[in-house]
Image 1: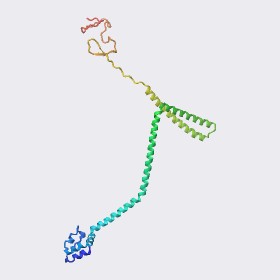
Image 2: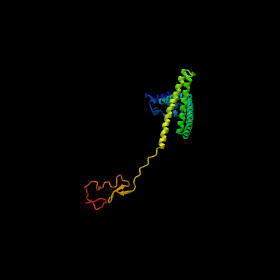
Image 3: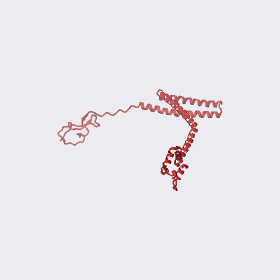
Image 4: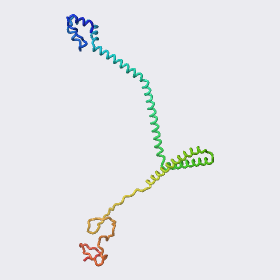
Length: 252
């Protein structure tokens, strides 16, 4: 608190002057001031400002403000120091994006070429090409052997080149065999006729006279199956079960 304020309270006897640093406002400081003292404060704005600035809360706020400004300045300096690295990373990202775009365009172009080649090339053509390259590799390996036997190649050169040619020929043989199997499978699928469905009988005829059951037009047994045959067993006769007459039989 300013010296002025404490001097003003010294005229009030032994009563201690209030300390505004322990208060939330200045009401206790001013409540015992006379009219002249209040008028003096009103006329002296610098004294009012001095009293306010001496308050602890105001001083703490000023200190916090200074500390916050210092912290903000430190953060800003740190961000500025990182700007070159950030610019470098941004340029690298733009370069990688451009590379990715070029790779994507190349992929789309190659995909279109592949689809066009797949339409123009069939399995038989591919098999013929594989067989040709396989035979060519076999000829080249034989030429290496002939050159070695003629003394035109050293043993080290012969072993290196001949091994590479035989491995290439082996791989091409495997591819050719696989392609043959694929071509044969496709030909087998295209040449095998579809199994026609069985025709179901549509015309139904009675199984025997007087019966409501129906039988197919083609019966698996003879027409006399199930009917007792006269004369098959000598000395045997049959009673007529109904009034229906069956020609060729004698009934009791």
